[in-house]
Length: 154
Image 1 (tube, rainbow, N blue to C red):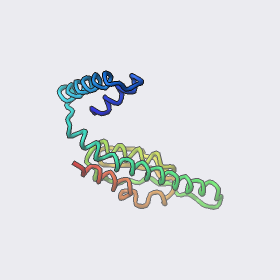
Image 2: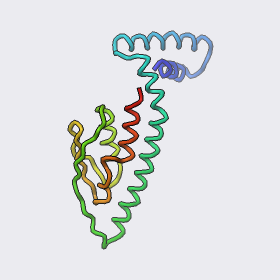
Image 3: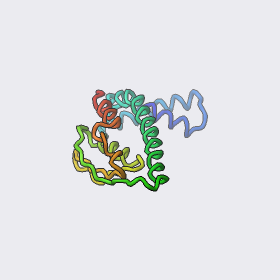
Image 4: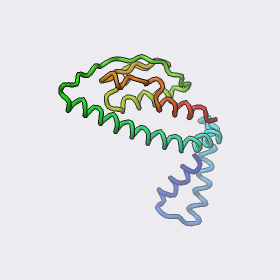
């Protein structure tokens, strides 16, 4: 977070001089100490965040690939008039521990065409799928695996 504060300071100033950098380091340090003391932030959270960046990038890339694949499948459903879709609602329980990870999973499911998270209560997911193909293996998808790996990082 200290680096984010310093980077914002430099961007808002529009140039880098020794004086701007020195003042930025002092102000960023003071703001970071304030966040640690009053907002219950810690250096460990920063370190964990830096360790999660590569996995988060991997997650976004896989999400984009899955969105493109689902778009292709939905387009096939639309352009093939004799194919009868079989919509269904799937219920599954997730082993994800944090609420943040569960919400990210629910949003990832909803962003993927052909599926929408209807309800999320605790670890229980209810997902409407356009066709039974979309419902297969949802509880052990690549999204769940990556989020479990990200939760395991300490």
